[in-house]
Length: 248
Image 1 (tube, rainbow, N blue to C red):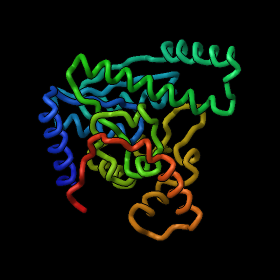
Image 2: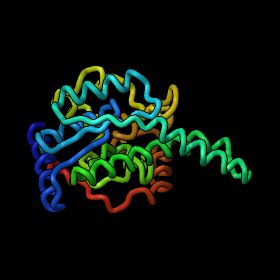
Image 3: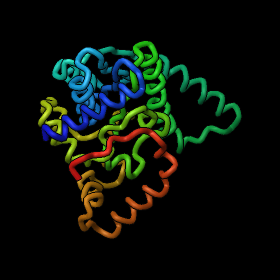
Image 4: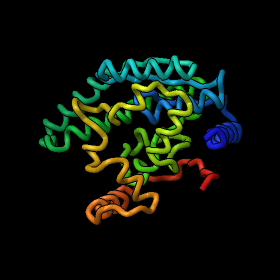
């Protein structure tokens, strides 16, 4: 595991040098993937890495976990409350759509969730411009393969260090790096609406997707669903630089 971590860190340092920037930043949500990335970039650039917490009506547990990541990793931190900005954007857009009879209630929850993700990414790039940093993504292999991320939101970053690692491998990294136990054991969730969990929204477990990616046998129905999701979301996977793992 130490070799894996060091390989990723070396890649992050190399990409930063090639881009001619000062360091790296990541949005910290209180979840596992962003926690692992925060620990990685802090190791890569102890003095030139930044974790940004961006609540949009975020629940108190996620905020507490995000702050634990900041404290535990030693990364420099910044908090930007985007709740008011989101409210203004969402209200303006919704009102205009309703006035033109284009508002679709069945699409609203997901559209609003994607607005939050894209607002956060806009904020990250604004901060990054002032620091002259690159923005680092948090998507793992399962999420990347099935397109479980927001295009130009959490998927719109400069570097993707985790997209060749399964969720279970990211858990193992988190344990090794010292990510707080409460984060390692919580149900994965983007926290975009009350009660939302990743696996309920995806329609299957991360273990199932990981098994598929590793060539193991899974049910025909799950295999079909994974392949459908992969095909439908091909447009989301662009030319963002991805770390190519050296241990497989």
